Length: 147
Image 1 (cartoon, one colour):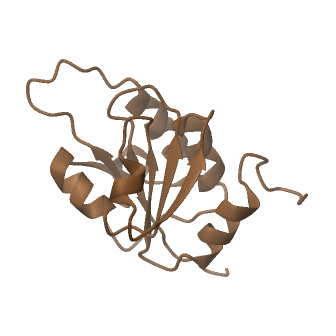
Image 2: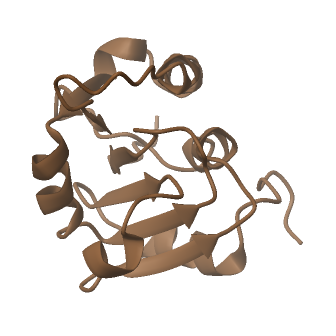
């Protein structure tokens, strides 16, 4: 065990987060996301039994968001006409604001099928048991600057 590391972050996930470099991206996916087919060229880590918010919060404790792009956090946009509510996005905004001074301004939406295309190029997909719809979130890694 290590001090200061959230217990939800497995050794496998910590290794992957450490391997990632500036501008590499990861997806934390909901339970409906096709993680295995989208992640054919990525590392897929299963975190069954967990939801996206708790994983997002733990990751952002150790993972810097990219400050060189306007939106280092991207959500899958709801399809036009789909009568889905996305209250989980409010949770994401609060979590991001805890770790990034841009808060909700760091977050953008990507059209659903474009999100899938971009997900095929990420370094890692974390597959969760999240039941909320449109709960997928993509993070772009930044750098750590010694002050």
